[in-house]
Length: 89
Image 1: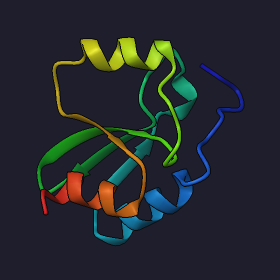
Image 2: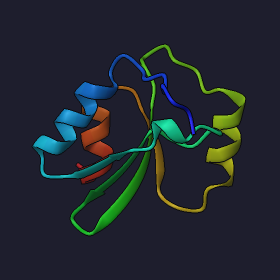
Image 3: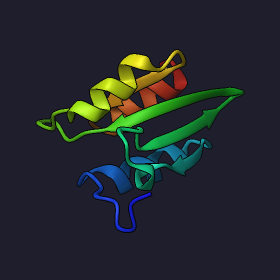
């Protein structure tokens, strides 16, 4: 686990927007090893979200983790994308 995880610039505003729509949000950014940034629960569904800036690229460990995950996962780059993935709208 990383003591001081590096957060993308838009991480906190995305978390706030998800909380504002009633989602549960758990940051997993400190786990490292390519694990995505957020665990989000909304209306009985769970999502794993990797937060990136508009120009951000996945690191090799993130590509590996995302490629091996058999559940719901998405890369999000802004508030609209986070809400769209989470709500399905």
